[in-house]
Amino acid sequence: MHENLLLYINKNASPPLTSDEEALVVAAFLPKKYRKKQYFLQEGDVCKYVGFIVKGAMRQYSVDDKGTEHVVNLFLENWWISDRESAATLTPSKYNIDAWEDTELLVAKVADMVNLIEKIPLFGQMTRLMDQRSFIASQRRLNSTLSNTAEKRYEEFVENHPKFIQRFPQHIIASYLGITKDTLSRVRKQAIKK
Amino acid sequence: MHENLLLYINKNASPPLTSDEEALVVAAFLPKKYRKKQYFLQEGDVCKYVGFIVKGAMRQYSVDDKGTEHVVNLFLENWWISDRESAATLTPSKYNIDAWEDTELLVAKVADMVNLIEKIPLFGQMTRLMDQRSFIASQRRLNSTLSNTAEKRYEEFVENHPKFIQRFPQHIIASYLGITKDTLSRVRKQAIKK
DNA sequence: CTCCTTTATAGATATTTGTCTACGCTTTTT
DNA sequence: AAAAAGCGTAGACAAATATCTATAAAGGAG
Image 1: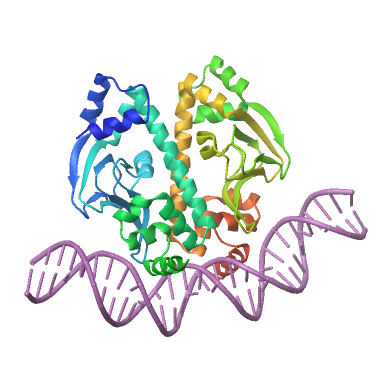
Image 2 (image 1 turned 90 degrees about the vertical axis):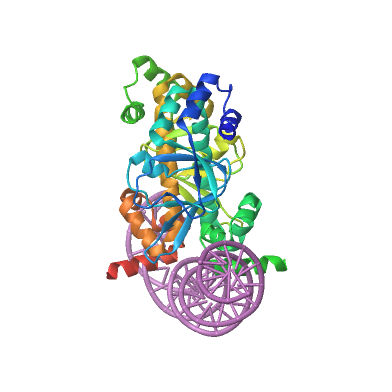
């Protein structure tokens, strides 16, 4: 169960973890199953856990005044989930995170994660890389949202995230792109003609 | 000239830097002046420097096929500038960064910055905090862009970034918000009535 | 001071996107 | 098997935003 996580760590930092270090990591992360639609985090709660997806699919979204959901992030295998803002500032989260498919997670307390970062330099190295990638992805997406039309954004999305297309329905992807499902449907129809 | 930087570091990490460490930092950062409109980074170049703004205002933007500029970030005193994506991946930048006002910078090579992070734990601590804040800000902005109308985004912007309003003209702020200057002008007119 | 650029606004019109309702199909639940 | 829920598409209409042109005031450069 923990192999995926250890593989992930060793792939994203070097040298490999010692067996002592591996033991620390394994001890901090508990396996947990989430059924489809089950919440990992609910709006208003402080995010106290970090999850690593071993198998499954999840989403992070906010809900506006009108009750409309806005997908902020989508996650698949080997992705980390948590609301960093809530976890870092200990404030109530503005987001919900739930399972889109039945999902197997490895879950650690945020505090334990901080501990690992301090104790295992390698782990710090890995989270630094993670942070960097998250930020870069976020900047890219922001730039794409600011610069492009719905159509071009969808094209880029198909290009960059083919796996999301296979695992999430269109109305979720539409929300991720910041448009309605109706608009996405139209955009796709247009695209086919070309 | 370096005081602002040292102050910034000590404010964002503890314990304070030793004088040896301070010397390392000072050695890595050279003061440099940028005139209004001068480029710190141009699209197509690999970002090899990191800057810390001592005094002035800068902006980071991309240019689309039609020649329209899209402001991705705005910076004032005590902000860090660089294209993290380009610097981390050593790929040509998609962005331009230029001075909006005459600006005094402290500039270090990306490589030297990496060096400082390795040699001075405190510096690593600070950059980690920086990264975290950047990511959180980026996520917030993305969520705001996905969830809110132009009007609400502007309100939030005024609330969260009053200093930007004082230093950058409306068409720059409009671009930052992902709308045209015309729309921003209308939005403001509406807002006054309330 | 004068000229030129930058900035903000306005109105007319076009385009994009959202909203709402409906329908058919598939999948899930009972 | 029947019922319910989820999903994708469609069309009519509404709302938000972009585009374009014009104007006038303010600020900077020479």
